[in-house]
Amino acid sequence: MSGDACDHRVDLYALGVCLYELLCGERPFTEANPKRLGAMHMLTPPPPSASASAGGRSRRRSRPRSCAC
Image 1 (cartoon, helix red, strand yellow):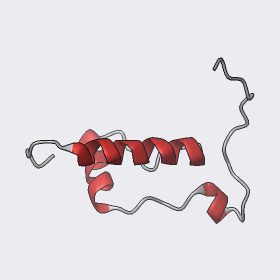
Image 2 (cartoon, helix red, strand yellow; image 1 turned 90 degrees about the vertical axis):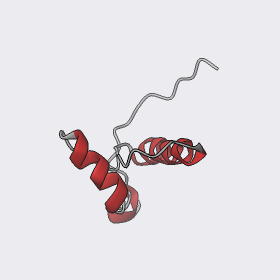
Image 3 (cartoon, helix red, strand yellow; image 1 turned 60 degrees about the horizontal axis):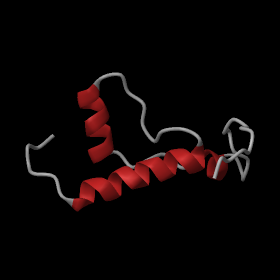
């Protein structure tokens, strides 16, 4: 958003967002406007995970455990 060149920190941040979604079952921020979404990522701390705010119970949908590995 600032026009600076990207470096390895972008990949680390993206990994963190992916891990947040994997562990919490939801994205840290949801916004339809891309500029607002970018501002939220830069200026707003992510909300606590659902399991932390629900006393250890996750709001994540239950998914069947299957792996083709």
